[in-house]
Image (cartoon, rainbow, N blue to C red; front, side, top):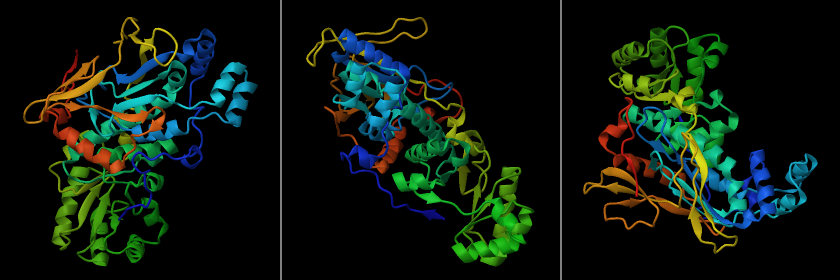
Length: 451
């Protein structure tokens, strides 16, 4: 059973008060960011214009593309990035920062500008998926909260996208809330929905982000009743014949017969959570058809990932529920994104001319300078390269610019409905070469070319 929840995202471009948006996020920050801030205020570098970029040096091993997710959540967190009396008191009492830094944080408001790849789009090694420009002081303290959100949500969306591809049109239910942190579960449901999952079991994701929710019963519901027949009859009485009955608590064939006997041929679905799923699914399909329940769907759950879903492609299955593999990124729980200073002004002040900067450490070299990005495509719209340049591009008619404004001079301008990100991901996948969707290990679907 699916319930379309009534929660709604803010209107596109809308700006809410921090109080209305939720608790402050200022302390979602590493200690070293505030020590850097203190020293920069003392040296005078705090007011220097600076540009930071978020990018991944590589994709998880064998992956062909990554998926951008979490941008909307980041904008919400940025709006609430404040240091109130409680936060300032904590920092003061712990002796973490001096009075000048406390004074700066008390009035902190990000007044710079941010550009980014839109949610749902794909990215590749080196893609500048977020560009933050402001003073060094106001931008450096955003590092941890930015990476915390984007590393998690991009990882989940990237795994979810592969699962959706493997399912090949069969709907997927996100049901990993019991396998991760309670707030990560909400973010995971949102990211999975962007990547194409149909529903989530998580009610808070339904309320906060309008992700459709679904759920029926667990084995405990069957076990608490005197018999499986009594449990099925009670569920059907409460939810109607369109419900999904869990049939693997005891004996699957007997449960299927009981379910159809009680519900009739219009039983909505049966769920199988254990056993040799390919074999059991085929047996259940044959039995349902024999009993006249030809429209009754079969939903499989039980430690599924993109590989096991792909292996079930030939089976008579109508949908899947995925939990642990989804909320852990299917083996890649982080997107390995970094937040690096790539340019700074030569002198303090908002009008200072930017100069590229980059670290040169062995194994982690950087590419200095503010970047722009376009997806270079051929005449049929198929992506050929991720083209990164250090000057604003002059794209050809078939090229697609990738960076869009999210924050302009401190004002959030990049909010959009979650459905827009979901539609964008479908379109972004469609423009990739067909081998991008292969689950076998390989190189990124398109090369990143720096001009």
